[in-house]
Amino acid sequence: MTIGGSIALIIIGAILAYAVDYRFSGVDIRVVGFILMLGGLLGLVIGIARILSARRGPPPPPPAVREERYYEDPDVRRRY
Image 1 (tube, one colour):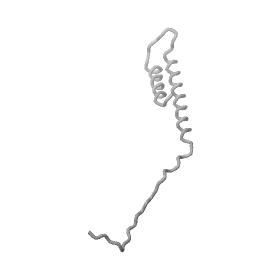
Image 2: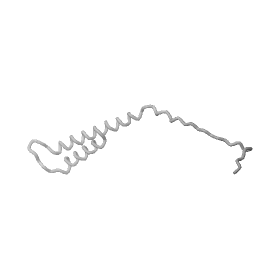
Image 3: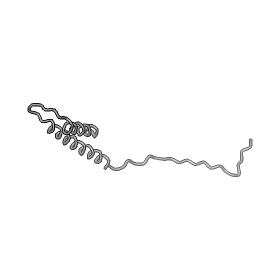
Image 4: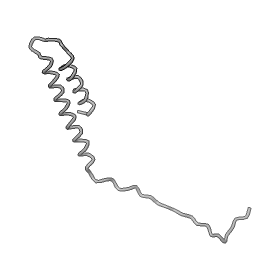
């Protein structure tokens, strides 16, 4: 689950838990909202942990740079 999906679950769960006042027989919307928020929070923690663990590897080697310098002899002058 991505971080965006986790945040979406948290938002949908909060809407169901706090803003919806509709009753189904046998289903409590508030409990469903809290379950979605907990699932989103768990997914968010796991997603952040995966991102942080991927960055712990050794840094890549720096790119090879080749420097070339050309010097002109001051005694030799070009005539135009």
